[in-house]
View 1 (cartoon, rainbow, N blue to C red):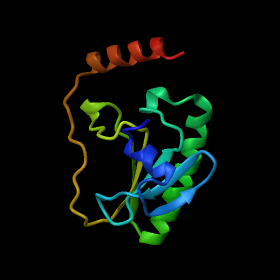
View 2: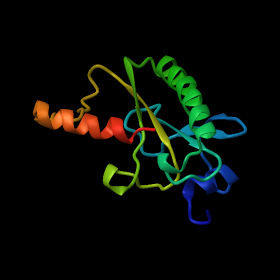
View 3: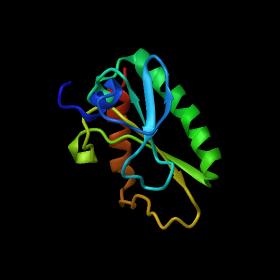
Length: 136
C-alpha cells in the first residue's frame, strides 16, 4: 500500500528500531510508547486488521508475539505484559496495517485498565448464545 506507514517501514523507506524480523513478520519499537520497550509486531504483507488475516498468518503471528513478549518482559524487567490489537476506528485503530502491541507493564506505572459495565444474567446468556451460534 503506497500510503501505509508500516509498509514503508517494511520496505526500508522509513527507519525503525527493529527488534525482530523473519520472512513474514517485523517487530520494532513503538515511536509513541505507553512504556519504554513498547513493541509493535506486524506482518510484512499488508492486511488492514484482524479480519483480513489469513488463518496461516494469524497462527504464525501469535507465535512471534509470544516470543517478543518474553523478550520484552525480560529485557525491560517488566512485572507484566499487555498484548493488544486495535481493529477499526471505533476500537482506536489509527494505522490500518495489522499490528499487535506488546506493552511492558510495571506495578506502579499509573496506567488504568478497562472499566466495568454492569450487565444482567439474561443479557449475558443472550449474547453468549448468539455468539455460540455464529462461531463455525
